[in-house]
Image (cartoon, rainbow, N blue to C red; front, side, top):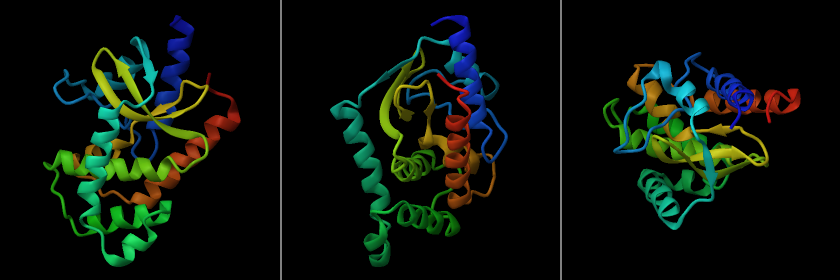
Length: 190
């Protein structure tokens, strides 16, 4: 990857990660067991590393399904009926966050909510779940085909909650899609 390609990727990651909180860590997600990336280094590490976007493996799919299943156990009958829509997924996330069902130290559980957020985002016609690999490991991510745009929704909720922030799932979702649409319309990507 050339220096110009890396800089363009950094711009995209920074642009998308400023959504909602203005921090650089919203899209950085080291895998379990991999070396953690400091918040100040997270986007740069992703942008300057050897990056690979791959199809999900059966193991990736099984992990995502297990995380979905964990959250789906909390659904009410009404939420089950609406769950096939992005709004239904966001309503479930919102209710669980409002009830403070999970504490800031419940990282895995909060990341399960991030999978549901990712599923809502993946309903956007240009976004798809993929596996993202760099020197820090492998993670599920959302990718815009034929571009360098990659997002990591799995940690978007957990990192905010761990910092003590209130998370409004609908505002986060709307902000992400608005910024994505802005970047896509601007042509500020590869």
